[in-house]
Every structure is written in C-alpha cells, then in structure tokens.
Length: 282
Image (cartoon, rainbow, N blue to C red; front, side):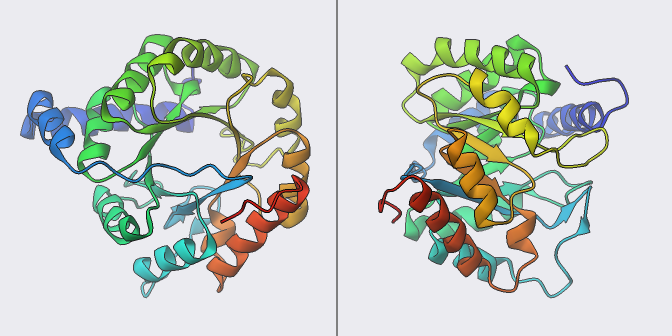
C-alpha cells in the first residue's frame, strides 16, 4: 500500500471521491447495464513487441505536455499510423488534466483502425471500470501499490465481466508477488489479456529509476506479457528491456514531446522487433 501523504495516496483519495460523486448521479447497477450494452471494444493485438502509446496532456514530473493548440485527433492518428498496440488515455483531472471525454474521443477515433484504448487513472473500485467500458475503453490500468489485495481482485473481476484487458502495475517486489497471485487466480476466467507492468518512476521523488526493470524482471509471472513503463524514449532502452524479457512498453512523455509521434513510435516498435529477431510488427 502507498505511504501516507504520497502521490498515490492523494490520487487514491481523490479517485474515491470522484467515484462517490459519480455514483450519486448514476447508480452502479445502471452504469453496469449501460456499459455492457455498448458495442464490444477492439481487442489488443500483442505482436512481437507491443508499444502502448499514451495520450497525456500533463505530467506531475514534467508539467504541461500540450499547448493550447494541441490537436488530440492528430496525435491519435499518428499513434494509429505508427503501429500502437493500444493507446493509454489519462482521465485523472488534476495532476494530468485528463477527462473521460478524452477516452471517448480516442475510442471513437481509433475504433476504425481496430486499436483499443486503455483508461489510465488511479482506479479504486469496479464502478470506474464500468465507466471505462461505457466510454469505449478496451482496457484499464490497475496500480497495485495503492490498493489492497481485495481491491485489486475486485477491479480485475469487473474488467473480466467487461471483457477488458488489464495492465497490472507494480513498483516493487511485493507488488509483483501480489499481482502474481491475482493473475494466477483470474487468468482461467479472463478472455482478454492480463498484462503485468513495471513502472520505473519513483513516485516519491518522481525520478526515473531504469534499473528497476532489471531488478523486478526475474520475479515477474511466467507466461504473462510484461510491459516496461515510464522513462523510455530511445531504441537503446527498448533493446535493453527486450533483453530483460519484456514484451512491450508504455511510452507517453517521449511521444507527446516530439513533433513526429508516429515516426518515433514506429522506430521504437521496430527496435523491439529487431531485438526479438522477428518481423511480426504489423
């Protein structure tokens, strides 16, 4: 669990408050029915090396990543052209300037290309998973460090009901252990993939600690695609995580800060595929 006063604790508290306010407007039973009545989202395609590209307007570590004239649709189009396996969309409103409307916009824009969107937020309860599905999401992020075992299991169960993929995020060895137990229990019931991510960003200092990928790699669950998260911006870093056994990466700030996000994304994917000596990159 996250430390008192940490970014994760503050985000978890705010997330629970947002869910409580939303539930007062639409009861969970009604939201669940509406979510499950929506058209199924595209499935995530995990090729030789998968990159989840991120739509992120602001970062607590870097500040604003999008000026007033930023074109969300153009960024999404570039991600589709660059070969994104999925697009992660921040919906947290304060630190990241996100919104569920951004998720809906991305889902609508990317559906013709068959690319799912993932709700990236500090989710604390199943209600928010149903919100994600109702907005068109094909996946959700679940951050183990801010949740109890029961809360992780409840979020994963809701995702299974919604047929969403789940990226279970770990920061340390205890997170990995707990995630492994959830995956072992849930995988027989899940149709969409359960992915395990390692976040290299220290949420106390906001610094990237790249060696975290190597530190946790040996403990990751076998037979599950591992995703390297945070601080990746070069082909050399992609090659390094491939060598450690990661099957994909989540890349946000580097793609938000370049003038050619589609080309940059394709270069990262190609680097991962070459390192795996596979041409299955499409």
